[in-house]
Image 1 (tube, rainbow, N blue to C red):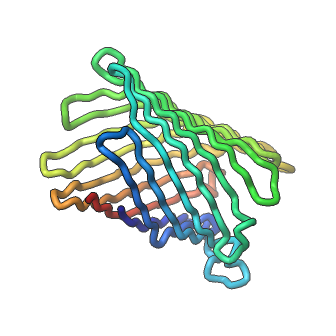
Image 2: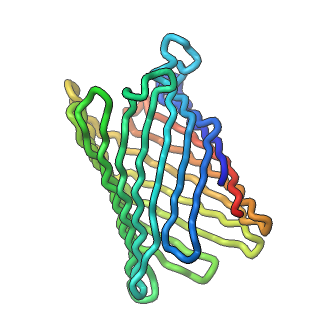
Length: 261
């Protein structure tokens, strides 16, 4: 079980409407050593934008997100399969539960050996059910190659695709993603990463097409203590290429801790 805090802030005032604070989130996971299955439950208190303290606009900027995830780890020889189903429910903090938006996410992660290394394929088709709106479809796909230098160091490179289709918006994006992982003998792990925008095309209803490339660099850290406590952090900076003089610069920080019984 555990908890975490998260803050996502845009540097320039004209983009502050997409700021996000999660304070605090609760997590709970159950697994069994004799079964390759697990169950996770998360609840987030999400406050978005500059206006979530304004009573007149409180409902639209404040939601509670609940997640229920059921997954497992399976293998056949050196081939691994890590499926997960996630039910995500976003409910307005001052709205009716019938106004909730639901997402059904299916994560299908494959690991296929290529020589002594690993080729991975991560798929996440998502079906969204929006209150008072037509349903829409969203998917993420990443295909990459992971190289293990030794038991404590590895690196990976992948190509990522994001696709969303609904009545008022169609969007497609491609990124190159780079990862590095270093595990120290004292239990600390460092995971720097980078996302390089290759192509992003967004067509909104009543508007002309936009190309909004996004680049991100960041680092994740974690520590596994002998007493079951595991603190972790994440920080990243993202630049969204909207226009030459109106780029969106976003900073995220996240801190959390989990405890294993």
